[in-house]
Image (cartoon, rainbow, N blue to C red; front, side):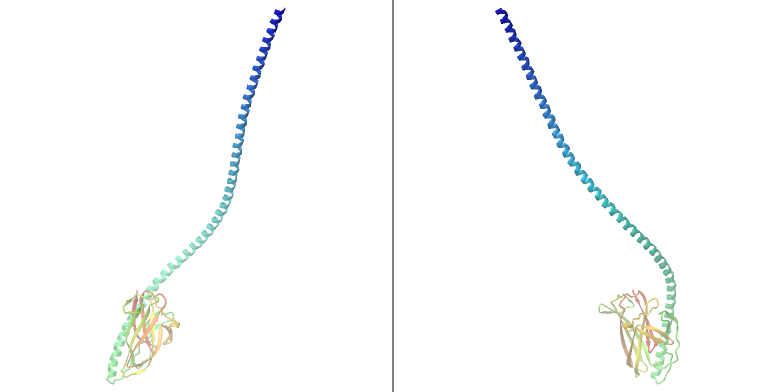
Length: 316
């Protein structure tokens, strides 16, 4: 009986050991499983936390991109307004350019008309110039005749001659091709010599062709001779300077005025009264104050309203 009890106790001990061992193994497995699961959970938590942080970071970047996009949209709207304004301005400029183009076309047409008119005027000027040359030749012949008569006067023979006639000119300053006839008068004074000198930078320059600027001046030197030489008196000397195209250089504030020649009045450049005795040297200084026209200029000298001498010079 004791043997069976011992055997039974031994079996119970084995059973208890086996049960204890099984429980220990189960408990160890449970503990190991819980630790492993906890590690996995912690790992997942860390991953979720990192993902959350990444999401927050990405969200911040997205918000920043949204803000940048909004700024770009606003800038785009501003640029659209600016482009619209520029487009309106360009449209206005284009309209002005078209208006200018129309104006230039009109001016071009006017220039073409003026060119045609100028050609006619050039032909007329050439014709007038030829007439003036002819008149100058006739004036030279007349002066020679006066000189011859003066020689006769010195020998005690009185003479009468036709005074030099004025060029028939309208107030429009166009030089005509005919003498204005005057009644015979006794001639005692003539123009012996005419010189034109340019005053450039304070220096006097005499030349047939002169380059002149608006500030430059002209000096007219006129030598009068009386016949007989003992003659005395007063004379009104008038100078008329005609530029290319037939216009008289006339300024009432610089000594210019109107001279009656026959039944007409013509403009003159300068005028002054002088006393003479036998002979007289006269100087006039003229300053135009504006551009001189290039080309041939005609200078006429009138004594007491009668054309008594003429010469010409070129402006280059």
